[in-house]
Image (cartoon, rainbow, N blue to C red; front, side, top):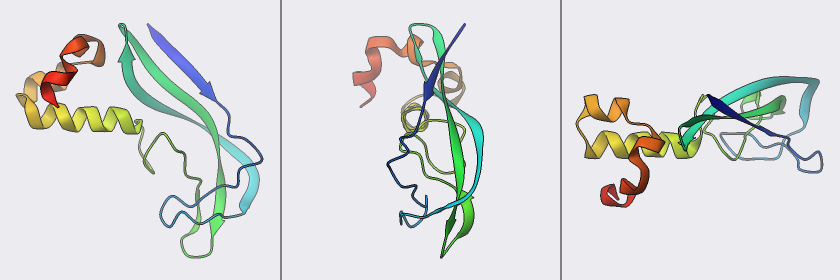
Amino acid sequence: MALFVYLKMRKSIESCCPFCHRKCPGYDCCTERKFWRDNDLNGFKVYIVSDTKRIKCPEHGVITEDVPWAYHNSGFTKSFDEMSCLLGMCMNKSFAAGVSESELGNHRNEYQ
């Protein structure tokens, strides 16, 4: 079972370059629907879904706009990436690879 959370970027906010964080104009009117895997919630796999647009940065050229919940070119949210790194540092690698957020439960503070 999965939970899909749909987010929509406000039109009033200018898009930023994910590298230099400059505000940049849109490149074209096309958008691309992207999915990011987030931490599990009570046994449900959570996915963040949003339409992203391409921007034209004077320094980096045409790229996908920055989103606040994920690193550039990542299919995971920042919180998922950070939890994965934490588990990888503190646990046996084979065990950490199979642990989901819901299995970790209240033991999160033990690894911080």
